[in-house]
Image: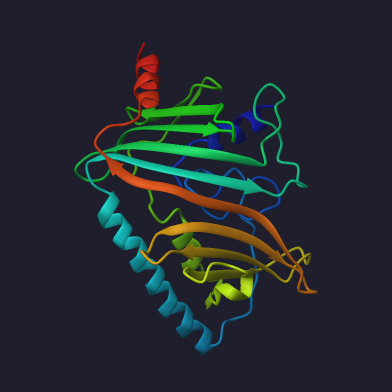
Length: 265
């Protein structure tokens, strides 16, 4: 029970470590939350010189896209990030609280009050179902995250939110390959640029574990999809994250103001 409590406690603490909220068998890909699953170790053959050069070039392209967003968003004010995650429905994800099953679809809303050096002074995270009911919520102040749903806390100290969502760690990992793919090959919008990060599956159940990053014409990351590709060519979507909003605003929402006032009582 303590282990499960810790797992759920970590899931909602968005922004500390930008890895995925992918619970169960999936390899952590990114969003803006602490993932509870341990990362799967993979073994791949040494990439060819051509593959290495391609990865270096494409890595720089992706990194520049994230740098542009950092310059736009990491400044004094409230950084506001909203994303929706959909998980495979045939995988047991465990439970939230009071026996409620972990949802296969949910929305995370993050608010970070940034100082002059882009460190979070305060932060609030809401986890909601698709009917906008709050499932869990947490708050950060004085160097500590307080999970008010579970009445637990975690001391972290100051941190900077990661605009890249942790995907650059995957891009630059030595055990992955990287390529740019034609959107039409995956029935996607032609106006998007798609990069695919690939890693071998260690359990032999699939040939590769692919994470696809979708950028729009303005350089915004709009979607990330994790796919299992089996030896017969069959693809199964393990998780999909849609980035609905990323902005820096002067004031937070009324819900954030009310929650902060409630916690301070």
